Length: 256
Image 1 (cartoon, helix red, strand yellow):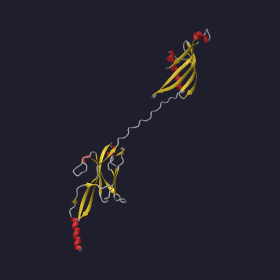
Image 2 (spheres, rainbow, N blue to C red):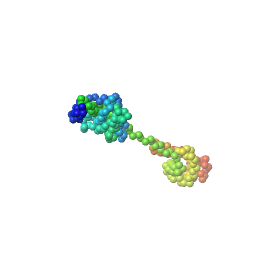
Image 3 (cartoon, rainbow, N blue to C red):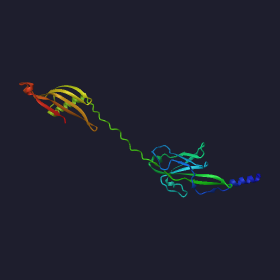
């Protein structure tokens, strides 16, 4: 009896392994789902397979083209990743793993993936190896969204007393072709971007008096100033002989 058992074990150990043609991979669930999409990232993509066969050795191939080799797997030149799925201890029929390479998962395009498995069984005193091939599925790495343009910066329309002094000087020179002398200016803020001023000055032959308004406005990112003046002017020579009322002439200016 012992001799017969020893012979049987010896025969089992030295029997040549049988080989079976690739069969459809037995599975109940498989992820990612066919046609799944992912944002480009550097994280590995998780894969999972559930099967009634609990003692398989499972691997996954990822390729850029669905071109099979003679054994049904992808041609080597198109393969970008190859990694195992490990069998879970708590759930022996569940196999999980993640892709090895993050370089392809950062490149937007459609990829093809396929799970394959091998399983060894003892049949008639021989170890027989079975090979399984799962269906070819696709996953797509999406193109990254276009960069978001930073929000447009609103120009600062705040007007300062220094701005008012400069605008007054330039405004008068542009309208009279002369620099103002003896300037008297009393200004008050009307808003964060405007001032109102009471002005009086003289040049070589005329005197002026009236009210000026200065306002900032923008065109796109550029800031401009609008100036207006309503008042009177009079000849110095006339004022030596006549009253202010008799010598005054109305003046209306606008920088626009």
